[in-house]
Length: 301
Picture (cartoon, rainbow, N blue to C red):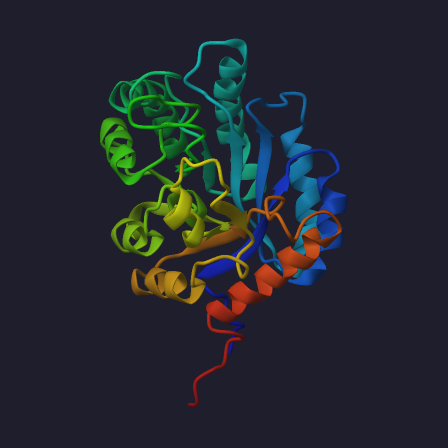
């Protein structure tokens, strides 16, 4: 009987640079099954040889059976300032080179009109992403918007319009292409006091990728100071250390026959950081594997 490959794979987020192959050599023995590469934050390094990077990384990943889950860039592709143009061209470049990574998903911020309203910003995002979505579709690729608010509210957009379910509806309806969806992260919903479970039940079919980052909410602080009282009440956490029950989240994904990857976005936990960064990430990986059901056990025949 062939080895079972779980349709929900578990990995980590890494930085796309020339040192990545060596980094993968060090972390893949811990059992990461997938890798999401991020190519910069608010900018894009066009000097990077993506074809060579893909080749070098695939050689390292092959013995472990690891795969690329998503190729990502985080900036504002709607802006016409120099950084925005750089990021917009970055989307085009990554779409053109995704086949070298054997990866069918490109993700990142939707961007938007900084300072504008969400409805106005959604129209501008659609103008940028309609041609990108068609370009991606011709190559068998999907696009996904990450849901980090980046300071966005309904009346005033920061760097990313795709911050909430109502905004997702406007964006996806405006673009009108089935290969555009959401890169989902429960942490950001929790930071807006939105229940991730309720959202996941509704949105699972349009969620193409999940970033594994949780949160801790200090409800006692909220009860005594509110959320604008100057007291910290919310922290990003590595899965296994936060408030979410990932067994429930993965159960909902299985109920929707979801296929994809959950990649741990590290470097945010206020406790498991510095020297404890990979200790926390590997704990989170093994925790998610337990939430996924543990090691596969074949049924009797």
